Image 1: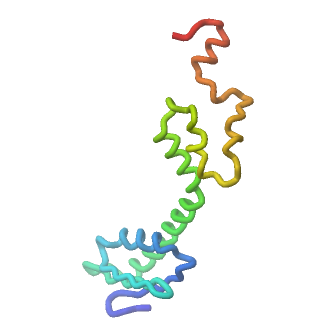
Image 2: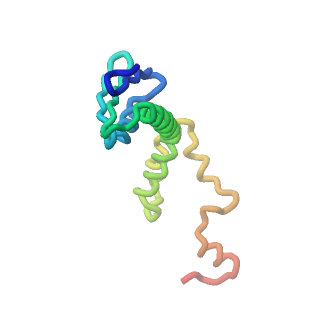
Image 3: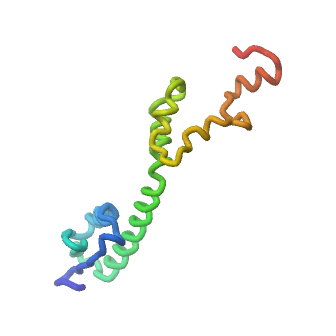
Amino acid sequence: MKKNNGFVIELDKECYPKEAVIATCCQFLANSYIFLEEKDDIRVTLTPKNGIAIKNLKEKFKEELLNNTLRYNISQRNKDIRDYIVRAALFGVQSRAGADDLLFSGFQDGSASDWKDDPLGIAIPWEEKQVKKKGRVAK
């Protein structure tokens, strides 16, 4: 819908998360005036600054909205693994004993015990592997 020298886009909340819409709007603050309304749907009103072509602005806005929606959806799908990585990084490698329950408390499928099995010896530090191979004591 065209409005004065701008345009209005009405978006379904189920298709476009509010976070993605706001992120898209933030990208266009430098070259347009933006007004957001949220009721049953999300209504975005954009008015271009400095004589920018409305058609170009509208098409770019739609493209960025799809990009940000995809990023948001991927972010939500990867939330558990991202939380695990952050917890592991913040908790530190040095204090491993007793950390298992804290690190894997976010997993709902019971996969917390599966990581302890290490048939290939991947979790063994390099120095310990060298001691076993050469029979020497690591310094």
